[in-house]
Length: 332
Image 1 (cartoon, rainbow, N blue to C red):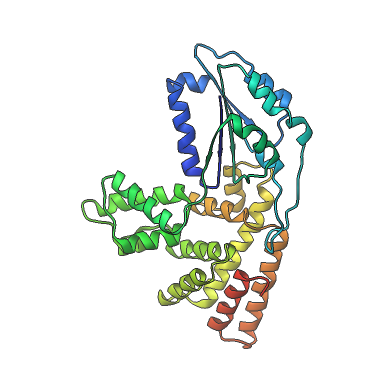
Image 2 (image 1 turned 60 degrees about the vertical axis):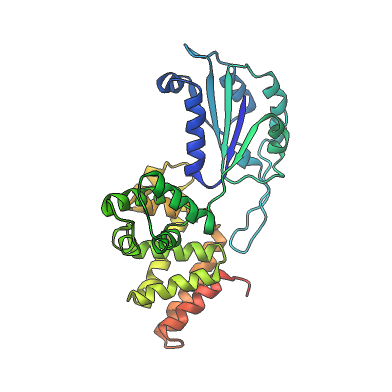
């Protein structure tokens, strides 16, 4: 039995994985018969050994492999990402489909990964043998619908304005979104969650706005980036402070990219000196959108903007708006 779960919506992916575990029986028994493997460094021989083991006092053995398919992704070069092609050990894994056909019936194999494209060579070979589920990040109306459904499922209500603001501030990070919804439900109690509730209660509201601004920049959403920028102005946030926060966030992104090699999430949080899990999760998510060259280019633009303000070349607001436009459209 083979499952392939992939996508950037880790919250929904994890829920799907938990459902697979629940279907296999008692939680403790399943846990005792579960093996987690790092697919980035795994060999086919090692996988065969783990999958071939007989379950102990259970009908099934669960083997979860994280990051195997990502090794064989062909990634297109973009202005903010200059990644190339990788074929790390591909020849060895061309026999994976043959092995899966011979795998013990007692073994349930789950391949977990981030976004995987249809031309992935290993995915193409094994997908006919698997139950494949994709979990892309929710955006726009799909994200707003999820927020409404989540609030309703928890027995609460929420205004459309509050839904819109939550979607803009938190984005598709459903782990963070679920945490904020739980707090808002406790705070609002019997009445619907309002826009004012979101502004008062969402963790690090200005920092969340900076994250939303960097998200919009990274994803090339000019209108959204400018709207967030002007909302920060309306809230009385000084342009020079916004610039410093954007600069800080790109510094964290650069550090997170370096620390992400071999360190756990908690170790990265400690090295970055961040206290809130929300900030760590958003930074790690954004670090995946940029390579070193992309971060360095953004740093150059941030420096140019700082000099333009200090020398009086542009007013602070105009300089910041030009910066955001350039970051969103790097080739313009």
